[in-house]
Structure formats: structure tokens, C-alpha cells
Image 1 (cartoon, rainbow, N blue to C red):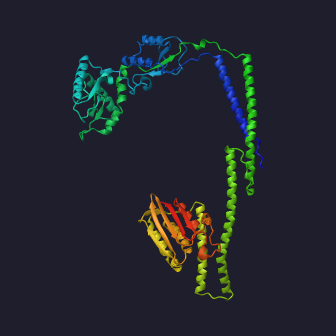
Image 2: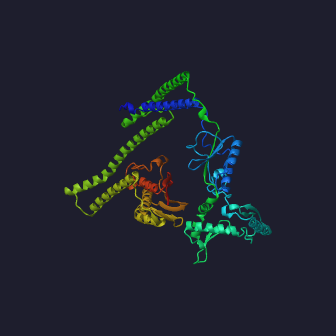
Image 3: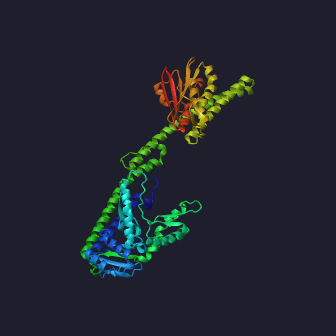
Amino acid sequence: MTRVPPHRSLIVRLLVASLTIAVAAIVAASWLASQATSRTIQQQLGQSLSDDKGVYDELLGYAATHRDWSGVRPLVATRAAKLDRRITLMTVDREVIVDSRAGPSLATARPSATVDPLSVDPGLAGRTGRIDPRVVGPYRTTPAEQRQIRAKLAESMECIRHNDADGQIVDGPHGRPTLVVTNVSAKPNFPCAVVPPATPTETRALASLGKLIAACAGADPRKLLVGPDLSVRVLDEATGWFDQGLTDRAAGCVDQARRTQLEPYAAPPALLFVTDPADPTAQAAFPLSRQNLIRTGTATAVVLILAVLVTILVGGRLVRPLRALTEAAQRPADNQRVAVTSRDEIGYLATALNELAERRELAERQRKAMVNDVAHELRNPLTNIRSWLEAVQDGLATVDGPLLTLLHDETVHLQHIVDDLRDLAAADAGSLRMHPEALHVNDAVDQVVDAHLPNAGAGGVRLVTEYAGDPEVVADPVRLRQLVGNLLSNAIRHSRPGDAVTVRTGVEADRLSIAVIDTGAGIAAEDLPRLFDRFWRADESRNRATGGSGLGLPIARKIAEAHGGDITVESRLGSGTTFTATLMY
């Protein structure tokens, strides 16, 4: 047995890994413990505002309605006192705007949120729009315009209700009242305007917004229409319809253009910090005592010793069966069995090794039997050819027609055996080539039956075909004929004069079935499992007239398997035999 170097030994690697993990865990635990006892309260910087979103929303509302932060101090002081928290606002350059109380520097801290009414945080604001609707800017309408809009919406509401629907008036973008239909009428289309026309104030603001959108989308501002509900359309003068491509591009520019237009009317972005008011830096460090250090060191040593002992014990139990498996694998010729002592991965490996040894023994027996069979099959025709050639050389025979026919038959028989062996070798190697194409299976079967008519007639056997329709399938026509031919020739050889051999085809779902049925002597039940073994024949005399080469049925099964199917057999002594090939197509 090859000795494994210590640095590659499984037990050494397991020991090193266990020690590394144990040391890392102990050091980490000790560090965490010392940090927990030497510090009290860590500064809570960047705390989430999930416990009180009202702070963010109130500051967002202030920023949406003011051009700067100059008057925000009273609001910050009120919210800080109510929450008993420290609230700080900074510019994006980390300059303090307002701070509710003194405390540690927040120059490098992570902000709780960024207050920007033109880029709202959906998670904190609880809405999907990124621009706060409270930023009105140039869209602020006069009281008279407000009354005019609501009057128009009231008329629309009456129209909607008259058409068996309902709705409500809500504040839309930039504070403009909007009518929302809440109960759709059964009528497919009712003539009620839900969006009143823009007021003079809004018309001027929308015209300015249209220029920004047109510049972003690369469209002609004279052809771009912006509605009071901020819908965008771009006209195509050539067709008189809307240009859908430019309209989609312009719609994607609406938010950017609105931010540019509203930026002068809102406070600039500010960083918001909501932290604990306590100053942890005033707390003195609490060092570990000597007693605590000794206790920690002792615990560390005990854990290390236990880890080493457990690793050695577990590693020894793990390596022992592996050594047995290695010794068995290094002597494959002995086919040594390994005791299965566990049900874990090593136990599965031992079971697989034992199964491999059994398969190897079976394969060796089959190989020896196949070599003997091949030698026997090749010896007879080669002996006949050699004997006749020597007889011609010695002048005991003359080269005439019958002799040439005999030699030709023996050569053809040899060629068939070699071809069959080649096909089986290709099938075993997974390289049996298939060339599927669309064909009518009945035509292929007819060709095979016609080719076997002389042989069947010579033996007094009648061939019958029964077709269920004329299915068109996708298969290899050459291999399909070879499969049917092997089954048919096998049936003819085992039929008696006066018997009939029937070839029946049919299709079910995606499967093609070809059955070859003979009324011959049948096959004994104990012989059925060996029918597809190579060179096995029920007739032990190996008579070529009845036994063939013993390769036809194995080749037929390989062809069926290559088509995604199989061959089954049913037989009773004295009642004939049925071979059924099932193929996927």
C-alpha cells in the first residue's frame, strides 16, 4: 500500500482544519466579549427612520414648500424634543444646516435619509412618485382658477353619475384637483371630460415644461403637447397622427424636465441624521481584570485540547474504512469485497466498490464466453474454406461453379459475423450511427418481407403482413429494415413447414410498434431471459440452418434502444413466439 505523506493525510488536514476553526472561533468570541465589557453604548449613527417616518415626511414637506432651509430650526427642535432624539440636517457637502443638540461629529457617519423633494425615497414616503406633489412652483393657480377647475370637475361628476358611474375629486400633480372615476359605468364610453382644460397659469408653466421635454427628447417643441395631467404627445405633421416613437421618448423625459423646472422652487437636498442623544465618548473604557483574562485563557486551552482529541478520534474512525477501500481498489484482480460498516458516504462507497467487483467478475465471464463463441463461429467457415483450397492445391478438387458457390457462401457468412460484431461494438461504445428521416413504416416492412420470401418459401413458411393504417415515422430506414430483418429471419428459422410468420405494425401516441409473430415450436420459459445474450442459441447444436450466428437478436435490441425503445418477447412451447419492438419517433 502506498504511504500517504503526512501533510496530505486526511487526519492531518482534518486536525489542521479543526484547530483553525476552533482558534478562529475562540479568538472571535474573546474579542467580542472584551469589546462588550470595555464599552457601553455604541453611537447609533445612520439609524433607520422606520420607527418614525413622520420626521422624514415633515422635513420633506418643508423642503417642497420652501426655497431654502433657513426657517427649518423650529420644526427640527419640536420633532427632536418629541422623539427625544438628536436630529441633524447637513448639506451634501457635510456642512451643518441645523442640529437639535450638540454631540459627536457626524462628518463620516451614514445618513438616515436624504431629504430631497425632487427625488423622494419611496420606502420612507410610502408612495411611488419620485417628485413630491407638494412642490407646486410655477403651477400654483389663483383662487379664481381653483374655483374654475372645481366647477368644471363638478359638472363632470354630474355627467359621470348620470351615466351610472361614480368618482371623487382628489389633489393631483402640483396640487391641481383631479377627478378619479371610482365606479366604472356599464356603458363602454360615456361623454364626460374628467380633466378640465389648463388655466392660464398652468398653460404658461406647461409651455415652459414642453420646451424642456422637447430638448431632452430631441423633438420640435411646436409639435409637442403637454396636458394638465402631464401627459405628453408629439404630432406628426406628415400623417396628422401622433408620432408614437417620439411620444414614448418624450414621456421618458417628463420627470427629468419637471425636476429642472421645479428645482428653483424647492430647498436643496439635505442629509438627515437621527441619532441617540447620549454621548458614548464620555464613558470610560472598562478593561478586563486579571481574573477574567485567566478564565478566558483557561477556557481557550480546554476548548483546544478537546478539539484535538475529538479530531484524532473522529479522524481515526474515518480513515480506517478508507484504508480498507484503498487496499481493495489497488488489487482489482482479486475482486476483494469490503465490509460495509456504516450507512454514510463511506458505506455507500464500499457498497459501490463491491458492486463494481461483481460487475467486473460478470464482465470477465462474459468476455471469456464471447471469445470462445467468436472463435467457434469463425473456425468453422475458415476451416471449410481452408480445406477446399488445400484440396484444390493437392489436385483433389477442381475449381468449378459449386465450389465457388460454397466458398462464396462461407465468405459471406464470415462477413455477416464481422459486420454483426462491428455493429455490437459500435453500440457498446455509444457510436452506433443513426440517420433518421421521414418514412412510411409499411413500405420498409414490405421491402424486408419481399427480401425474405425466397428463404421462407424454401422452408414452406408463409409470410403475412397486418398493418394498422400507414403511419409516417422518423427513423433510420437502414437500421429499421435491419431490425425487422433480424426478427423475421429468426422467426423463419424457428418455424416448421406450413407455419405462418406475421409482421404487424401499429402506432400509439408517440410510439411505433412492430410485432413479428410466428406459430413455431416456441421457447421454454427458462430460456427467455437469455434470448438477447450474444452467441446464445436455444439449439445447442449450433446448426447454421436453425441457430444462425447468435447475434441477430442482440443487434435488433441495440437498434431499438438507439431509437429510444426496446424489444420484448412472449412465447410458450408449442404455441409460437411474439417479438415486439417499440420505438420512439
